[in-house]
Structure formats: C-alpha cells, structure tokens
Image (tube, rainbow, N blue to C red; front, side, top):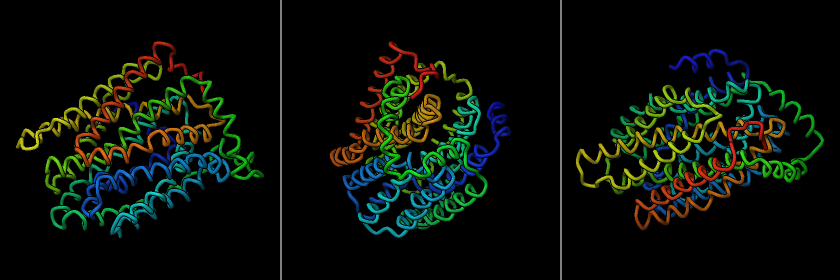
Length: 421
C-alpha cells in the first residue's frame, strides 16, 4: 500500500476512522450483488426496457430524497440520519430482492432504495466534516479501496453460480447483503459521534420543520450558481454518474446475452475491474493534485471512451480473442472509472461551503439525479434494439465531458478552492 495512504489510514480519528473502518462491510455486502442485478432480473422474466424503467424509477426516487436529504440531515443529525436511512435504503430492499418474483418486487425495492440519497448526504458529512482538508483525497481513496474488497469473495460467487445456477446463487448473495449491511449500520452508529457542524445545524434547525428548512434552498442555489467551480464539479459528476448507471445496468446484459459468456464466468469480471481500481488507487491517485485536475479528467474521459469502444467491438464468436478484448475493455474502464469517480467526489468535497455542506450536497444530488433519471429507461429501449446502443450513448456523454472540460479550463481555474458554493 502507498505510504501516504498508510499514513492517512493510521492518522484517522473519530468519525473519519469509524466511516472508513466499517466501509469494507459495504464491499462484502452490497458490492457483491450489484454486478448481477440486471441478469437476475432477466432470469426472472423482465425485459430490457423494464430493467431500464426500474433504473429510472430508482433515480426519480433519489430526486425526491435528494431534495429532502439536506433538511433531514440537518434536522436529525449526520449520525442518526445515516443509521435510519441506511436501513430503509439497503437492508429492507435486500429482503425484497431476495424474495423477488417479478417486475413489481423490483419496482418497490427501487422506490425504497432511492432513500439512499439521504445517507449519501449524511454519510459524506459524517466522513469528512471533522477531517483535515489535506486528508480528503486520501480518505476518498481509502473509501474506494474498501468498496472494492468484494473482489476477495468473488470466487465464492463463482462457486455458487456453478453449483446452484444464477437465480439461487444471487438470492444467497442478497440475504448475505442484508446481514452484513445491517451489521455495518449498527457498528457505525455505536462508533461514531455527531460532527461539530452537525451539532450546530441540529441546534439551528431544532424549532424548524423539514419543509421550512427545505424552503431555504433558494439561497443555497444562488450561492451555487455564483460558484463556477461548483457548477463544473456538478457537471462532471452528472456525466460520470450517467455513464456509471448505464454500465452497471447493462454491462452484464451485453456480456451475457450478446457475447454469450457463461453465467459461472460472470463473477470473475468484477474481480478484474476491482483489482485495476485498487492498483490505480495505490500507484496513481497519490500523485494527483487538486490544483491541476485538467489532465487527469481528460485522461479519464479518453480512457473510458476507449474501454466502451472495445466493449462495443468485442467479437461475438471470437473464441479466446473475445475474452482478451473483453478483459482489456474492463482494465481500461477500471482505470477510467477510478480516475473520474475519485476526482468527481474530491471536486464536490473541496468546492463546497462547509457551513452549507448538507444542503449544497442535497441540491447537487437532486440536480444530478434529475439529469440522469430518463437515461435508464432510454438505455433500456436502446438495448432492446441493439445491446451495443447503450454504450454508444455512453460514448456521447464522455465526449460531452471532454468538451465541457476544455471549455471550463479555457475560462476559469476550477482548482481555486476558494471559489466555493
């Protein structure tokens, strides 16, 4: 492990320590299930367009809860909001996914799962509000690594797939996710404390209703619109989020249904991507500077386009060449995803006014969700026509990201962390 990350890990205290140290449980619960959600739905009789519609319903639910997440986080406090809504957003849906039989099971689970926007806000505040600013990039790197630890247990998934077939194997993964995720919620609750800023916001909002608190969004929105760096961070995060959603939803579909990769091979592809992501974090991330992000952002977009292009042109009947091209695509995508995911998180963390962090995160998340909401369904309709078309759409968004980055860096310097929203 890179010395700077070891130093960061050892120096963590309080809430950053509690959040980072419990995060591996995410990789051992939900991260084990995500790669197979779409093929699970296909196996239970859903159509591509229905899978895309569920992805859009999930996003629309997130829009509502993103709007409420700031007031809820300020009213309940970071610690309590995280515990309550983690259980609603993850533990309960895991039970539904475990027993799912058709479209409406996934529909209801998607609506509940959308409440995760509250914990996206509250957990992020819990993670970084009491951290030193120079630790933020390192902390985000450690969070990414922890999320990739599911790679250690992917061979178990392969054994389950080969012995039990796809549906029973995935049901076992979901019940495991319920147990481990619930354990994570309990441990984090007892080993964390309310943040300093959280205590201030709780006192300020004590006599106000959530609706009254939400009414204050107008002032925060004006502050965001005055910060070009914050707008840029939101734009990059939105594009990365759309591409990520389409990839998560339809990557296994194209691999399983178009490229005809056997089910028992499917768990090994996330292993490749996770290993690449971890290698990136160790070797590349420590050398990134928040004051010089133009080149890394452009490299991330170009790598992503390369990976998506390779996936589109992977030969269907290419024998071993098919797997070589597919694995190369995964390696490139893994680096690109790690680049852009970490940079987008760091951009938002660095360019947000700490006094309004919860509400700025809420508005940012809401805007991002509103932008990407239609594209799950659109990608599903495209996939029914040709399973390569969702990835052609991804390339369009990645090209848009390159154009936006060039335009922004020709006019302003988003690396100026004093320009906050």
